Length: 314
Image (cartoon, rainbow, N blue to C red):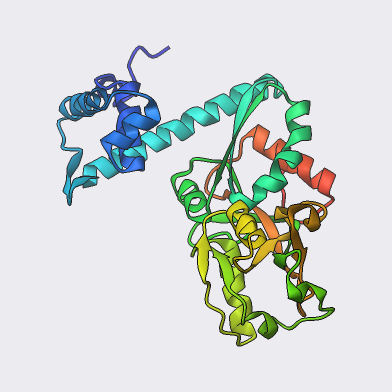
């Protein structure tokens, strides 16, 4: 057995995992204050850890940018190295879980906000079958989910419009019908058939720019040559439903965001020609990273339960 340490390991012992965690959080969250808040530490503690890390490595990790700080080129490289270390450790935990027969392990999933209406129900049977698997579900807007995919924070992500600039495998697993909704007593609710142009005189409520639902809405309006700018932009489906119910306008929502009977929420689905607009919910994962056993098992489980064809690794 060799008594020599792996090359670089002796130098690595000069820094601590606590220092690396604080540094990575400061880079990822854009500041020492935010990192301290996320790590539940005092800001001077995080600053000291980063200064000690910089001194141990003999490099400058941050430089002034505007009123804040930005990582230097070497700081960016170190942040990437820390993420690779975390990914390597995750693979170790996954291998250990495999040896335990899925009795232990962790599965990280990111999902856009609308999936909160159905994704927990889909994860429930898997969670009950493998109680030792810790499932971390981060529900964010589309931009935040894409950022998490870029950093490799999660193994799987559920969304409607995956980004095209990342090496992603895609598996459409559930239909996403999009409908136009109005308050229950709205005059248009009595009509048997409507054109999208008929709605354009009403105030339009929409999700924020960059959201999948907003992008589909803009596509549909452009395809039908309808000019209908939003009167109000809201950051969640629940906020939109409340605003529609209050009579502030009409909106396009995923049917998944509505209760079984929309009338129970004070809403009505309008009979607009060409609606519902049908899209797909897609599960994605990085093709340049190996999926853990828990992730592969979940995908296999969903494919069997949903009876959906398509690429889902086993």
